[in-house]
Image 1 (tube, rainbow, N blue to C red):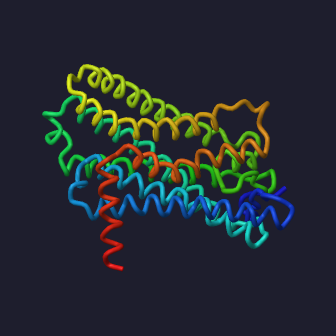
Image 2: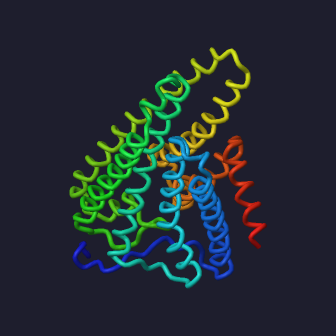
Length: 310
């Protein structure tokens, strides 16, 4: 049986046996990837170019767009290349890099969403202290903490996972390298350390989830007490997109983690992986731009300037 020292490459999940279906998967993933690149790229450009969006909320949104771009760029390009060239192979180093980048970015995104809920809490519940509590230095420190925490998670999980002896071959039953699939290839009694890291990450994530829930309970209590209809509308327009993004992100990850093994299948695992790794980065820009008038105005202004220059 091969171990980690003798495995030089992994074999990712094959999308289909026929060439037509492989090209269809390539086209679908390409469309989703281009949508994510366009949407997140527009948000990055709008926030960077419009001085009215140089506020804590949009600073965190800029960081979220960066994380979304990195997350979807970690998984889809390799999957598209494999579909296009009819191959399944990914090198050992490439697989380790993919695991590190994905865990790093997905963890940092969850921590950032927690910070963004605190931003909305302060803006709605403590508006007089907003500039004091969320100055430029504090925002930079919180964003840096989210990125650094994600990086630490990525290092720990990657080092722990790829230090395991691999006794079950090298076929990864997913379209990208992820920790649970690598653990399936390890020896039966050698993966407990990584399971401990996963349990620690779950507890940390549960703490962040509780913080988000408590923040939004306080936010909705404050919003419902607002006498002004205009203030009520503005509060909902800035909070609901973030709440929708958080709900989409958490629900897909929770379903991936708690679905019973009895209903597990290659097709279901593939769909769930797409839901939590591909769908949020593609939908987040749309969710944030639907009800946010300031962002809509900045994007409209950006398009007008682009058309004039042409």
